[in-house]
Length: 472
Ligand code: HEM
Image (tube, rainbow, N blue to C red; front, side, top):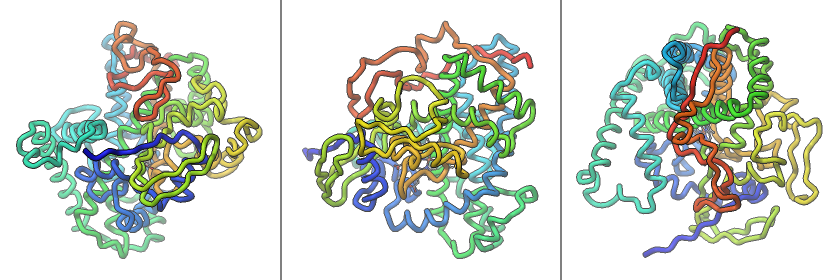
């Protein structure tokens, strides 16, 4: 049997080396192997050649005017969530919020990426079930040591694979149909023209439309399908997770909840937020950032070494990485390391507002956290540059998330709209079985994939809450 070597990286200097400084010496390795059957040559698993072409096409699609317009779309999609919370609050108040956040995130990604109305907050459909099935299978594969899906005849013989392939076909048919329609009504324009669109008067503001209309981007349907599938999967559960954990932490910390609702009440009241409102709701933005620090989703970044190289000493030990070695960059460890983040297991959104650069003389190799590197810029949230790679919720370097701003805006709008109207308490009867229980894992124990424990691990049993209408 072939043996594999892997290393867990929990050091910001080494993470920077792998993700930014020497990123060409690494590829996505096992992650690409697992995701390729679902995402094809989409950005996440793509080989370097495909990646550089598609990344150049996709990044401009997330331009400022579009993101501004998306803020309105997030508000629109949240109306269905508000209605459903309204109904729940009148009917005894019990509600599972993780599922609700997953649904609204799916509705948002459907409309914004390919102008498809999932309507999943209000209904179930075979297409929605197919999306969840693809996600469950992707997750299952990431935790399965042997690629059983590659075995001869597995696709015909293994029932879960048969079901998965059927579901994938349902999704593929929907995507193919949307792509055909977008291509049939193609209106070719230069990128600059596309970026100047008046979105208030654009019938279909989706990313798909942008990618199809872009001059010079005569891509085949399969590549477009892979791009869309990747964004559907990458941009849905990640956002739902940050929303779920933010609500969990705010419910645990009533003083922070009071602070955030006071801000929401004074800035937006009952309006749906605009981009400018989000700029003004600084504390809410810090709540999102702090949630992403404590509960990064994904908790690990995966790379495989292509050429032997030396890792810098950083804040720990020097090491040589040999060809073929799998590297797990543990965001969870980095984000909860007290050398970089004092009181790392405490939810303290205020930490991001320090007046001065925070450095730790015990780790001089780390450049510290410098609030000026994001607060005095156009960035709405702290990032890897401001923290010298000790805070990487969206990764860093060339393969950094393309949806970072989109996702954080989406999370901010959703929290603002929900917390303005409703208050939440844990459903005590369900607390024991919820993933968000206060159950602690033994301290200082290393999880097999590099998660330093000491906090609750999200096990996806949901966030069971009692919801009430707020008296405002
Ligand atoms: C809170 C929400 C999100 C989080 C925490 C998140 C996190 C990440 C992380 C950590 C990476 C880097 C992976 C790596 O280096 O291996 C990544 C990549 C990516 N994300 Fe996100 N993401 C979020 C939302 C989104 C959304 C909304 C979209 C699209 C609409 C998206 C699309 C992508 C794509 C396409 C990549 C691959 C980029 C590349 O390799 O060039 N993500 N994301």
